[in-house]
Each structure stands twice: as structure tokens, then as C-alpha cells.
Length: 209
Image 1 (cartoon, helix red, strand yellow):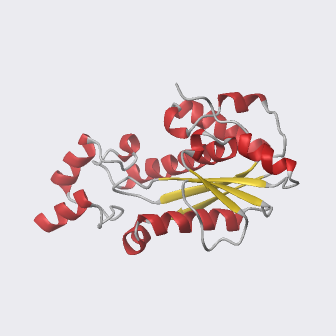
Image 2 (cartoon, helix red, strand yellow):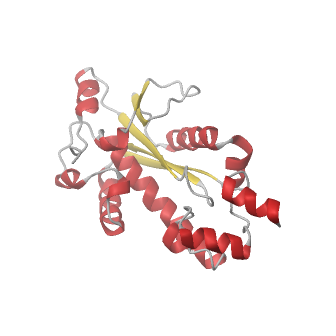
């Protein structure tokens, strides 16, 4: 079993005098529908909140645990912000560029400017702030893991709302990912307006229609 995320990267930066370290992560690169959502989280330097012991990469947490931890992050962080890139921009820009733009948007919305940015996997060439991309950062850095939780909870809520507008696809359950239920509905109903037209299963449905 993988070790839980820690402040190993943050502590090095805090020791160098960079107190405001932001963690950045995104959710929604893989789904066939809906937006890409990124979150930026600035935790207090050298914080030792008891709830941090329960933080993990959002993908391995239950929905209830994610909701609980997102509440703690929103309450105790110095600043948090979201960046949301709609499905149409995913099609127009490609998923990697859309992800970068979501991350940049989240950073731009922070109420405090970070002195350093830790990012899950990607670099942000257009960001002028000092930064470090970390592969599997959401499982290694507590700041990035907190960002992954905030982003996941926010995107899940958007897809729950989408389920009320586009019934039959199971968005409340699959959140736009390519589950069997979703693929069957896509074949039966065709794409709705928030499906990503450039993603292969959606594109295949359009070509067959």
C-alpha cells in the first residue's frame, strides 16, 4: 500500500523562506462529458491540522470522505480557488491545454499570491511563478492532494447538476466517465450538448448517426 501524502516538498520550500506554497491539481481529463476542473490550495505554512492525517489522493477516497475533507480544506486553508474549462474548450484546445488553462485559472483566482507552486504532473509554461511538477503528486504532496479533493468535489457537484438536465446518461453516478452504463446510453440516445465531440466514443456515435 502506498504511503500517505506528506509535506516533504512543502517543508523544503518553507525552510527556504517560501511560506505560501500552493498545491494544484485537476479532475476530469478522462470523462466523455463535462468540464475539466482544477483547484489551487494554499495551506498555512507548517500547519498540523488533525484532519490532514486522513487526506489522500481524491481517487482513493469515498465520496463521503471527500466531502468531509473538502469542508476542512475550505475552512482552514489560507486560500482556495477553482478553474473550470467547459467541454467545448476541451474539444477546441485538446485535453492537455484545457487542463493547463484550468490550472492557470485556479491560480489566478487565489486571494493570496503563492511564492511557489507544486503541480500534479504538468508544468505551466505560461505561469511566471516558481513551480515544480510532481509525477503522482496527488499521492505525495498534501497540498496537491487537498487540491485534488476540492476539485473532485466541485466537479462531481457540476455533474450531479448535469444529471438533472440530461437524464438517461447516469451522470450522477458515472460523472461522465466511460462506464458501460454511459456507453450504452450514448449508443441509445446519442451525445448530449455537454459531451466532448473529439473523444473517441462520442466521435464514433456522431459518425454513425
